[in-house]
Length: 277
Image (cartoon, rainbow, N blue to C red):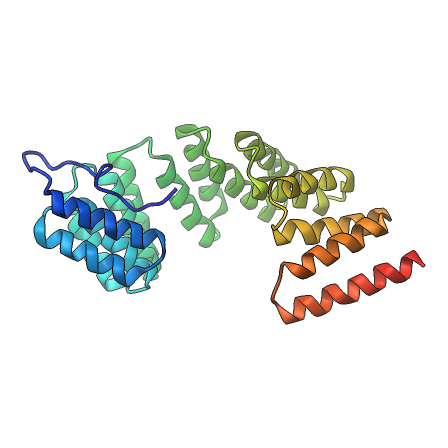
């Protein structure tokens, strides 16, 4: 889901009639942002603000665009203006936290996320972002707590299940990781990444049949997902299914432009072919 805020979704400032041209420019800015054309996005969002200087959604979107450009002083500046103006403070504080985090000021980022949660204690995405920050800081227990709160706020937040699983993997608690990755796949059974992650967890624990089952599910959902294709090639090789293995190594070869990976895969194809003889 895009974090950018279009005109239809923005908070409405009390007593202020939304300017139609500002709304059009805001939506154009969001369109450019979703295409990752940050300069054009910023141009149109600034034009929207010139017509409607109290448009908190435009400040939020400008901050996000500057964060993507790694121009963090500008990102912080616009996010702070959004905080000052926004009726719904949680999205503004979330944006401010992302700007501070990008700038490397994790203390202020954490404070901003917590202020956002004070404004909206049921904001699952904010708990998720806070958990990610704790994870980067290697504060694994706090990360687990934040991800748990994200799940409590929204039991269908698939990223929270996946991310809490990664933390349990780091804590060497493999079964807990598999438990949460299974829940991620249950929440979004059409997500190839969720099935891949679950397969990788089983693979790491030596449960090859379950790993292959999950990888195959991931492949059925996205035949061009490189990690799944390569993992299936290696898993089939371990199982002695050499023709399948060679076929999937060949598929993997077609899905990467990395010269070193291509060389490694070509060696695997040769080795697999020699085993079949």
